Length: 70
Image 1 (spheres, rainbow, N blue to C red):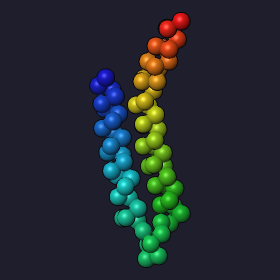
Image 2 (cartoon, rainbow, N blue to C red):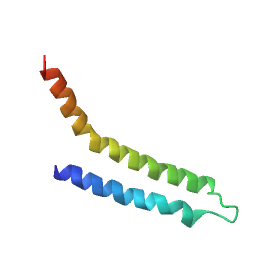
Image 3 (cartoon, rainbow, N blue to C red):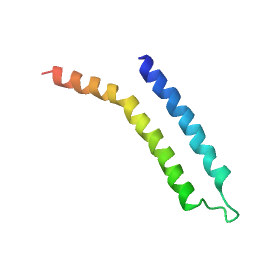
Image 4 (spheres, rainbow, N blue to C red):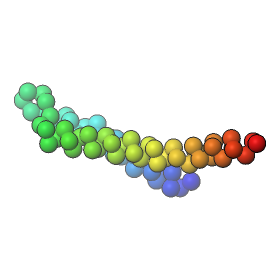
């Protein structure tokens, strides 16, 4: 369980960093550079991947429960 809490904390920290990143990198045209877009997309993917890792044990438990009903 502590691993899940650790991952949740890591995901929250990663998301907070991702949310402010575009505001610190936008140019005069209000757009991110191609390089910064790639960086932001990686940050966003990391948040999504951490979410999947957090949800995995819950899905495994649900599948086990379903399979054990029969």
